[in-house]
Length: 125
Image 1: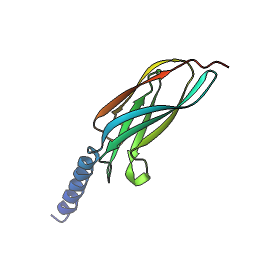
Image 2: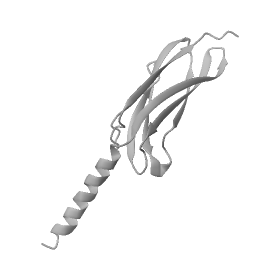
Image 3: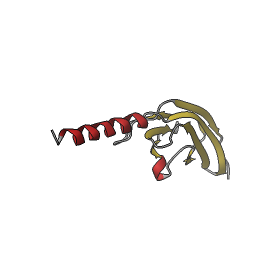
């Protein structure tokens, strides 16, 4: 009987951690052009969210050009909302940038999703 109590406490602690991890959610995505030069356009992507206090989650940002970035949000490691990603587009076009939760390692997926549109024009020398 002496071993039963610590095992029950450990299981309860894990359950509480798992519940807290599901709370963070994505609320918005914005993208703004920072700098242009011939063949390159630097863009600042900002993912906003809520509920990350004392919790963790993971998300993927799809850049709309076939590439993506996965980030593990963890308030204790100072990786929290708003999340800023700098991205360079090498060709003109219309891009749909989106963010949604994904499972990554021990990180559960963030709740919610958001997207925005970005238009990159050709820059000439």
